[in-house]
Length: 289
Image 1 (cartoon, rainbow, N blue to C red):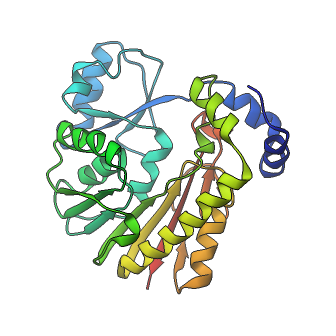
Image 2: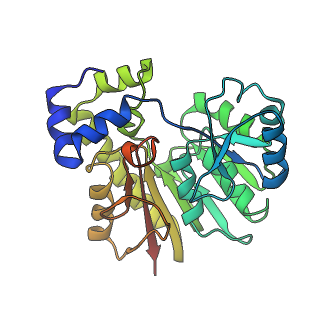
């Protein structure tokens, strides 16, 4: 991997550069989430172990498992039938901390490809209602396919600029468009491209959009509602500073994410690749009183 001087200087201030560099030289741990709308955790675990899958429980998600490297995950019958979703272990966190129940009206502002949407639907037992919005037409196909494959019945898909959405919601997930610097892990073309494209101007441009989106999300939230803001970015400008912007502009309250997980805390939890061998991720929980 080749790092820009500015990247190395910045990340050396944010975390232990040696540990970070070592962690991202390896590919992230593969993980799956059992789709309990179609099968129980016990049943799928037994079925996969009979096929010699080596599973390790993800500590913060009862339905989540790390899987020792397999090349047949996406082509397996269990995946085709929607029994599990191939999902990064850290990206399972937002749906968990939303504190969902079966009566909730939920907005997923930037929903595709649907990993978090299908997770929320399973937590809600296909009850309540989820509005899964996507603003990019080319991403709608994947979202709809995954909802259908996983047997999701409580979700309506909308195609709209998130800043133009209307209504009031009990729970809102804003998994915001970001620089994806947390996905810099493993010697892949994706990592190479993300490192090549990384620059401070792009980060600041995205932060402006994220600030607009988080204000809009808070506007759409009912009183006593819960919002989760998350990104797969490790940039403070896209994470902690966006949340602080909301706190400064509104009466929003920050709530500590109550999970037994190793993470940095500053307006939310930030999980670095060296903590669990995963992609980097940021999650913040916000309450509207």
